[in-house]
Length: 480
Ligand code: FRU
Image 1 (cartoon, rainbow, N blue to C red):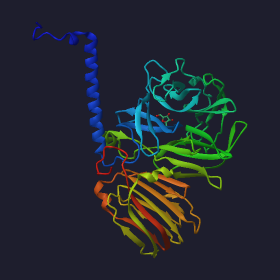
Image 2 (cartoon, rainbow, N blue to C red):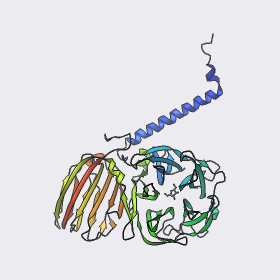
Image 3 (tube, helix red, strand yellow):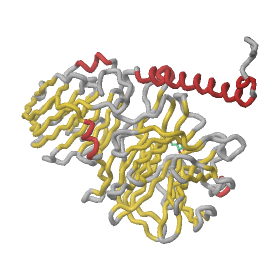
Image 4 (spheres, protein in one colour):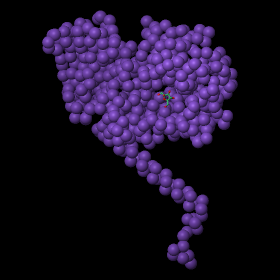
């Protein structure tokens, strides 16, 4: 007969004991992760229809399309809402609207060239293998990881494939964010680099086997490039270079004899948007994502447990004048839940008193606004959003949202504004984007939406406002 206090044979087995300890630890970790998610989801500033990873820090998306799935890898600090110890996290979507967070793809490894972080890079496919190129730190070395399914990754044992010693001496310390592509049976890599922060100098490398890389020359050197996160791709007859420093810049031009000659250049987004990079989908569409960074004090970010948001996907095309056109992807209309306003009207304003219309918007913290204007003769026109943020064009100083922007006379205005709690993404006529962060208390959204003009007229051909669905299962304000 077994003794009452005798442990069962299972419990004394050291292997079982270890398993039990691991299970207990996992349970504690999971409980903590759930607690943090719940905590973060109660934060009224947290967006509801933008993708965010589980609590922690995110930056720099790395978009990649394969077999009907939109993948976005991104820089991630698990559990901690400040930059450090970078991992690659991974999310996937079938429709560019709803996202599933997948297991972390790359971890820093002690004693390896990425021991202090796996920084930004790119993904390509060769045969039945996917290859992720990324920067291992410190110093900045280019590393490789391989996968058969984009989910489980194995690091290349002979990492790095490009050592920091291959960096030309005259450049500053930036030597990172490999962007790899294939052309004429040759592989090319572009690395973020520069003489100074103001003047980027993305460096071109070439390889036949993706393992041994030879440095060729700077692809381009000058103010149209930043020294971080290069992306380079053909669009129609032209080539486009995206790169970042302070803001993400675009340059459209020709790629001749392995040198890039920009013809037009500009800014991808004038606001809290950075490290823009693209994917090419099976409809041959170039789709851009960026990192929307926080603008509230660090203490508040620490308290909230999360930092950083993935931008809404944006469609890139060429305008007839050769500049880059950037618009929200059409899939985003799926997020519209209920039409709150559908209207059209004319407004007339005077020098000392503006003409305006006001609209009560229930749930003004989670909406999309579309407004189309014609016959714009007013010296100033704009909208004041329910949360208090103003979106104004000043025809005298030629400024839109406090940025230099010239709206040609009698030009129709097509404005899309996505308000998702603390994130506001604004798109004007496909040639101006600005992402704004604001953190008003929830009560502030009870102010009406105001459309106004001063000193002249506007015709509002269309004003549509929709409430928007939530893509997260945790929601504080009853949205689905
Ligand atoms: C841009 C950047 C990249 C770098 C990454 C590190 O935001 O500085 O150049 O790879 O962030 O997280």
